[in-house]
Amino acid sequence: MPAKSTLKNAFPIIMLTIVVAVCVSLLTYVDSCTREKISAQEDEAFKAMLTEMFPEMSRYEELKDDIYTVYSDGSQLGYAFLAIGKGYGGDINILVGLSEATTVKGIKIISQTETPGLGTRVTEPFFTDQFAGIAIEDIALSQDGGKIDAITSSTISSSAVVDAVRATAMEKIKQLEGGD
Amino acid sequence: MGKFAKEFAKGIILSNPVFVLALGLCPTLAISTSIDNALGMTLAVFIVLFFSNIIIALIRNYVPNITRIPIFIVIIATLVTAVNLIFHAYLPDTYEALGIFLPLIVVNCIILGRAEAFASKQSVVHSIADALGITVGFMTALLMISFIRQVLGTGNLTVFGVDFGSLPVLGEHPIAIFILPYGAFLVIGLLMGLFRRTGVMKSE
Image (cartoon, rainbow over the protein chains, first blue to last red):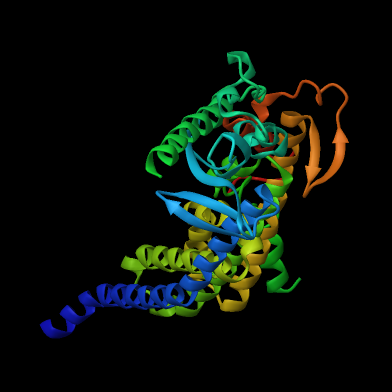
């Protein structure tokens, strides 16, 4: 009977279609349940990072084009923005805090894909803490006349962070001065 | 020994996923640089393997042979994505700690390998035993490799922020090759050879 054998041949395809349909609806459901929570978590994480840099912070707002102004009660503490460095294994996303007087308040590595055990050490405090209180023109590796010591055997990752922080900071300061 | 215990025990030595089955080498090579990573990866593998083995054992009689692989892949990918989203939303600290490991499970062929070789042919209970045994076997292998790589490659041993001190000479001059990807091949190859030579593990 041809009808029966057609059905038999179609069975694997029907089964696969059912599995895909169930999986897609399940994922859509999970996504709709978790979306709000996740974006709230991300805001929370961003706020926590800013607070670590600016302990006195009471609130922040986006000024323009990814530049955030940080306030403590009424007074302005400084600015924060994102910088992207070209690392050894891909982009390094960095959050940079700036105090008013074009001095770096601190930096934080948000994400990176550097070599485990070597380049990944750019996330560690012994490297990032060096940036606090350094004037922007001095943000360079010490071998290039700056004030930041590179990580041993991770010069590419180190200079990617340093270059991104300096270049982006200069660009953002220009925007802040020109735009107001 | 009951069948449950037997299926559990075989995952540790007889069918050790890394040293005997040579499954899941991609994530093993990538993350076996520290004990912390090894434990994070083990947890991620456990969660996904546990559920995928159960689901696949449940539907095994309704899966047509010809489209079984795409069906398994869709189920595993769905599980990984769902677990990823749920952790991100409700367990942000665990999500943060697991970081790259959860998404990496997609390329972990241990999960698909066990679905194909075991869960699609066995009962739910035995599939659970298999998932547990394979997880312990995977953890044992990862811990050995990461221990060697971390100690030789960085010269010291730190587990979850607890410092166990550094070695006298290696602390100053670590052998960085062990941290790099080719160091992973070296360590896995030597351990595999050692286990085969001494007869602890045999190839299947």
